[in-house]
Image 1: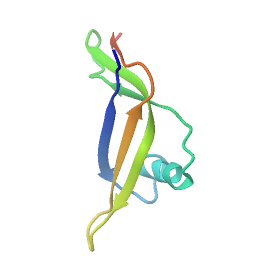
Image 2: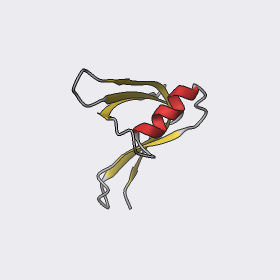
Image 3: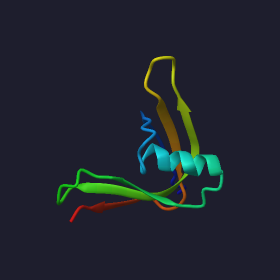
Image 4: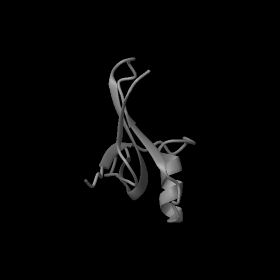
Amino acid sequence: SVQSATITAEGFVKYDDTIGSEELRTVALAGTDSATYMARFSSGVTGDKEVTFNAIITSFEESAAVNEMATYSITLESTGAITESTVS
């Protein structure tokens, strides 16, 4: 069976950060994202299930209305197998 996943997330832009939206913006502006990111959905509680997969950035947008905080949205697409395991 074919497994695929899409993650869409939004957040506030902080222009003086060095990770988070700044890092994503740098990748998006370069247009050469060859990196693979690990997506992990987990409670972090030993014995609980977690889901992991590799993903690439397929979309990144920033926007802001007048006198409002800037926000960003990002979309990632899975690139391989989606695995379920137990948190240890």
